Length: 217
Image (cartoon, one colour):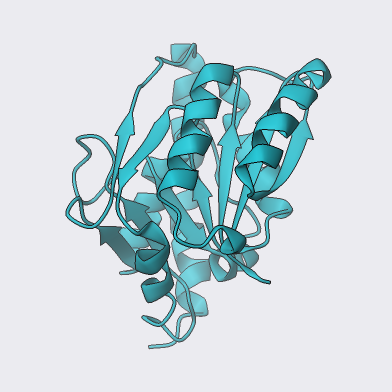
């Protein structure tokens, strides 16, 4: 069976990862259309993550890399996205816990909105405003056009900016689905933050242009 959604979940927090998967499973109305992709730092942790994911019933992939640190989060997302199978590919985290809502139904409904399927979609998360959410997904068609998922350590914000510029930003409201978040402040230097922002905003017009070029109006 084809997958509706792939969740990309880099993880270093084992207890939080367990809760994240439990919350996804408890609110999932069709487990067969979901896959979980996780990226971890240490090979010795593979048995732990494999056990949790096998018990969950979700299809899954575990990627392992010795490169660690929050500044590499964009690389991790791109590597996971490259082997994902979902029609929608979501940036998720082991600090996000779905509380309620039939998110499968809501995401399925988005697949009939645009003939070209070029859009981004967000789920209500924490106290984020409607125009921005820490839980954001893009379509496989979006990925095929750009050739990557993210450009840096703040992918949710960048995707939201691109989607708004092309007029294809969908937000699933708190009334329909909601996710709680426990944020762990990232260890990132101001210099790295500045470099990532520069790259994000330099590439923004190019990404918008590429996506607009294949939109069906």
